[in-house]
Image 1 (cartoon, rainbow, N blue to C red):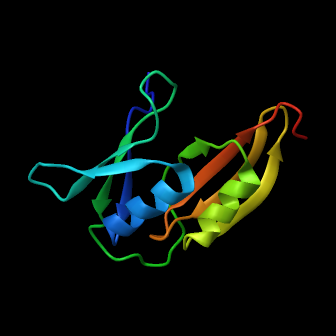
Image 2 (image 1 turned 60 degrees about the vertical axis):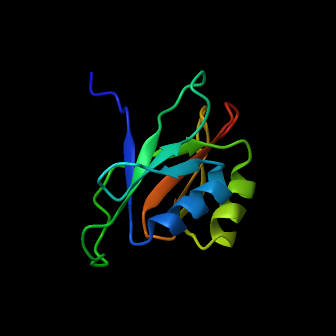
Length: 127
C-alpha cells in the first residue's frame, strides 16, 4: 500500500531538533539505547491516528540547494499559535499560512536544522 509508517528527521544537532519539536508540537524524543546515534520520537498517543519516527545525526553538510524530500505535516489546533512557536524556537517560515479549501489551513516551516515540515489546522470552512 505504500502507507507512511515512520519518519526520520536528519539534524546537525539532534538534541536541538528534539527540543524544537517538543516546544512546537509537544513531541517527545528519547535517545535510543542501541548502537546508533538515534532518538525515537513519539508524536502522540497510540490510540490516535498518526505515526512516530526518529531523529538522527545528519550524515553530510547542507549544500543550500533546494530541498528534495517528503514533507510530513502535523495537525495543530491553532495554526497561528504553532507558527509563532516555530519562529519563537529558532525556526522560520518556508510557506506562509494558506487555505486548503474544504480541508484546513496549512503552513510550511523550517526547523532549526533546515528541514521543512507542514502544520495543518483542520477547518472544513477554509477557502
